[in-house]
Image 1 (cartoon, helix red, strand yellow):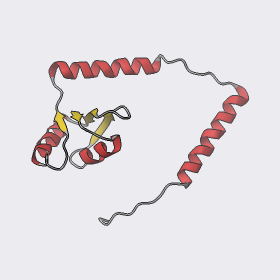
Image 2 (image 1 turned 90 degrees about the horizontal axis):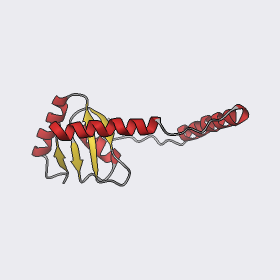
Image 3 (image 1 turned 180 degrees about the vertical axis):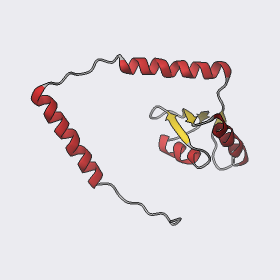
Image 4 (image 1 turned 90 degrees about the vertical axis):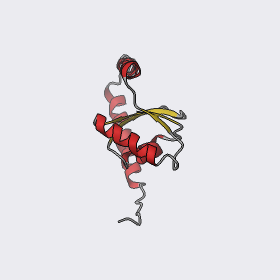
Amino acid sequence: ILVNGLCSHVLGQDALSMMAAVAYVDMLEGDTECHVRFRTPEDAQIVMKSHREKQIKNPWKLEVLTGDHEQRYWQKILVDRQAKLNQPREKKRGTEKLIAKAERIRLAKTQEASKHIHFSEDN
């Protein structure tokens, strides 16, 4: 599904996942347009139907990609994947590699320790 008028990746994923299971959100930071992939085509149809009923709540424009548009989107995915795989990687060896790994582990532990627990009224 192509979504126009979306303000953030997380907001869109949260709102759409209430209607059906979201498999992937393809959005660049700061963009107002994104592609949302669902696990099944039926999930996409469920989202379209419920969006028509609740269109007053959010001003998004949803469109199910079919035919040529869908082919172009899948081609874009393949091109993006190839570009990512063909990027030159910095090769680290020896102590540089160990220091970088230790830094990543330390950063992960710091982020894990600084997480906040949010409680909702639903629970």
